[in-house]
Length: 232
Image 1 (cartoon, one colour):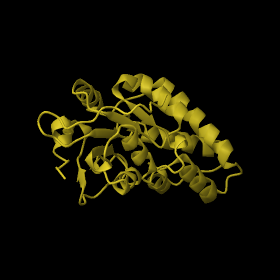
Image 2 (cartoon, rainbow, N blue to C red; image 1 turned 60 degrees about the vertical axis):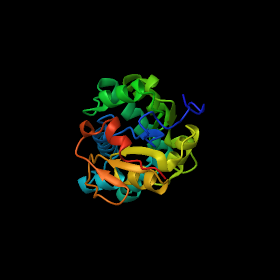
Image 3 (tube, rainbow, N blue to C red; image 1 turned 90 degrees about the vertical axis):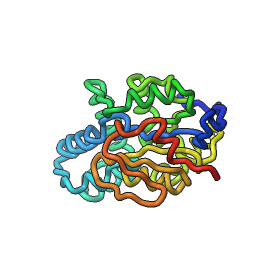
Image 4 (cartoon, one colour; image 1 turned 135 degrees about the vertical axis):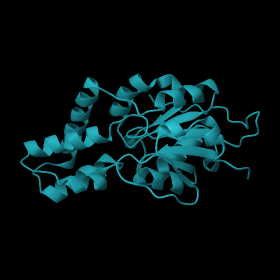
């Protein structure tokens, strides 16, 4: 469940200005971006439509309403958005029930953040029912707060989820480090004023001011994240 109790945030003994770490879920901590696409392909095949592989880059990382709406419009499938949303969530839950691979470095990073008592939030465009299932593998004890896409008025690429998470942790967004794998998530975090680490999963993400791009989560540790935040 979502925790709304602000965690104590202070400057650490080494003088770091990092106040909180905000982590995306699909494609960042768990290797599931491909799961969503596979489920979408299977559902539309049952509806008599073949998805163009180029559409994968359009739907990745965004809210379900956007990705599902795009696919309905692109294919002309005879299904409503609410009906498709239920099918997508059901299919994804079934898929992660069979296997839920974590991204390389995820377990180590979460353990390190917990060991150093760094306020950490999980911020996802996935719905609450999906997040709660994934948390059983990630370990809910690692997160002071979790934010689901169906719990905020506007989800990614809008800044609302990250602003909500920072406020819930009592942190200044400018002193929050965000780890994301898609351009949609990066846009949300940057719009919120956070420092961003991009770990691209499906499509490339170019470096930019306030954004660091790495090849794998294995390159990210607490020292790395602390180095992103300068005193203001």
